[in-house]
Structures are given as C-alpha cells and as structure tokens.
Image 1 (cartoon, rainbow, N blue to C red):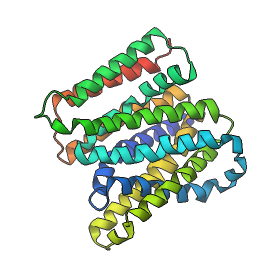
Image 2 (image 1 turned 180 degrees about the vertical axis):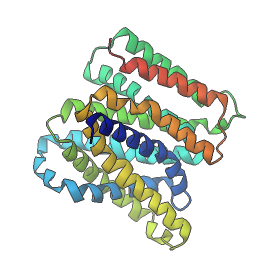
Image 3 (image 1 turned 90 degrees about the horizontal axis):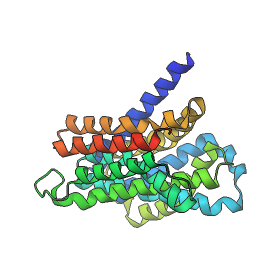
Image 4 (image 1 turned 135 degrees about the vertical axis):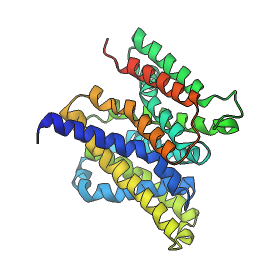
Length: 291
C-alpha cells in the first residue's frame, strides 16, 4: 500500500476510535458504574496487550518502576475513571472537547516539572486554550446543558492534566523502552487496583445476562482492547511513520467526532460548546506550531 495513503488511513482510524470513546462510555453506564467502567477497561486492555507484547517483559528494569507506576496511575487508572464520571453528568460531546486540552497540559507540565523552555506563541496558546475551557464549561449559566453540573466537567479537565504528566514522564524517563513495553507495563501496573475495584464493587452481581448488560460490557471491551491497547500501539506507529506533530494533529479532529456522536444521540449542545471547542483548538494549534 502507498505509504502516504496508509498514514492517512491510520490517522482517520485513530480519530474515529478515540472520538467515539466518549459516547461508548455513556452507553457503558447503562450497565455499570463509572468506576467499574474504568477498571474493566484497564483489565480488557491488559489482557489484550499481553497477547502481543508478552516478550517485552524482558525490558523491565527495577529503576523504571516509579515512572511506570506514575504512567499507570496518571496515564490510565485515574483518567479512565474521571472521564466516565464526567460523561454521566455532562453531554459526552462536551467531555470529548476537554480531551483536546491534553497538549496544553503537556506543555505546562514540561515547563513546571521538567524545566522545558516556553516560547511566547506557545505561552499565548496555553492562555487561549484555558479561555476556551471557561467558555466551554460556562459555569455562570445554570440553564445551559451543563448547568449546575459544570464541576463534573472539571474532572475531565483534570483527566487531561493527568495525561500531560504521563506524557512528560514517558518522554523524560522512559524513552529507552519500546512503545509496546511501556504500554504493557503501564497496563499491568494499572490492573492491580482495577482488580481490587471490581472485586470490591461486586461487579459479578451485575452480570445478569440481559441484553443491556452485554452491550455495556461490549462497549467496555472495545474501549479497552481497541481504544486503549491497540490504539496506543498504532499511534506510536504513526509517530514513527510521520512526525510527532502530525500524530498529535488527531487532537484537532477528535472533538468533532465526539460532538457528532453527541448530536446523533440527541445531546443538547449550545453555541458556547462550539465556541469553546474552536477556542481550545486554536490554543492547541499555537502550542503545536513550530516557531
């Protein structure tokens, strides 16, 4: 297959998978709680990753344990719980927009925790992005589709911040590991608390065999195996085939897919959501622009 064509096929596939993840979370809430969704998603991702990355276990070093645990908790466990909680109270399309703030937090964490330089345009981009977040959340209007539930949208913003810490940790502390190894170790680390959560929440009592339960479980399985495990491997492949900047451009299109699914399923989206999305994406463009 033509290489440029393959890169665009991968790009579109990633956008569709990640953009659809928020409406899938909402569907999974029919049968399971937000915490159960996050924990089960990790277990599905762990088992699937083991099926093709088991040989990468030999790359483990004790010195990598701390950063790997940080990536496991902040890059997987916490966001995978925070996003479903937000989706349970806020339109999934709106939650999908907040995910586009990840590059902004990646830049901020790199500046604060890792001492990376911050150019003027990128600093301005961060400011624009956070202005967009305020427009999106719109905490001053109790009659909007978010209304008094706007604090739940802050949980999605916090999840994006967790991703920022995880990405910087991978780039600064784990560059010597292969992408498969990083994914595998992070999943294994996150699977330990996930098993405890599922056991403590008595999730087996909810496995009634009803069509709603099975469809919810299928949504979680897709989120774990395709939206987490496989997508991360493919994303790293896209970076290798093109550039990190091109791969990061998925950030621009994911919110559009998330909003599209929200409209299809009748979610109430207002003008401030679209204005906030555009403002955030302008900020992300500034952060990613080479100067």
